[in-house]
Amino acid sequence: MPERFEHLKSRTFVIDQEDIDTDQIIPARFLTTTTREGLGDLAFHDWRYDSDGKPLDNVSLNALDTRSHRILVAGRNFGCGSSREHAPWALHDFGFRAVISSEIADIFRSNAAKNGLLPILAPPEAHRWLLEHPDVEIEIDLANQRVDLGNGPGFDFTIEPFARHCLMEGTDPLGFLTAHAADTDAYEARTA
Image 1 (cartoon, rainbow, N blue to C red):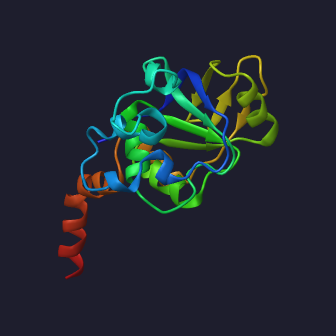
Image 2 (image 1 turned 60 degrees about the vertical axis):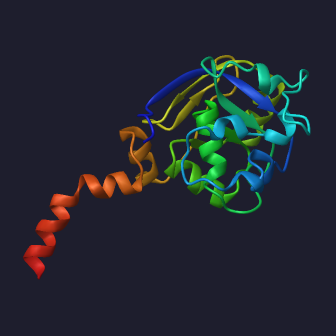
């Protein structure tokens, strides 16, 4: 179950690359599990490990402390490619709570929001500023749908209201439905 998301103050980690697809986020050969745990070790696997599975020394993702870097800033067209919930699962399990880009694939954006990872579309000026200022501390206010960049051009963003509600409550669509099971049962009893 995702944790509640209301405010997030964190440093950013920048991957200034366009067209990062879901197979780069988590290669298809790792899609054999239906659980989320441990998928963070597989995030960006082919970028982080050699052919023998040993961590590469010169890859900053391998040394990243996601306790202080919980926001991923990526190049345009992030999460493109095939639909797989494993991609946001892997990013969330790795330690990211939000991803910001100027363009995020629709299916990835939907999967992310349903699985505890906040996808934020930034306007071009703010996105460019974020790419040019890696490792900067920013603040995300989900309740007011606002990103404060400190010295940079802050911006508002929108997220689908139900996804916003679930993120703020720390639940997912299934958790929301099961929490209202008594109401559903009562309705069904009244209308039977």
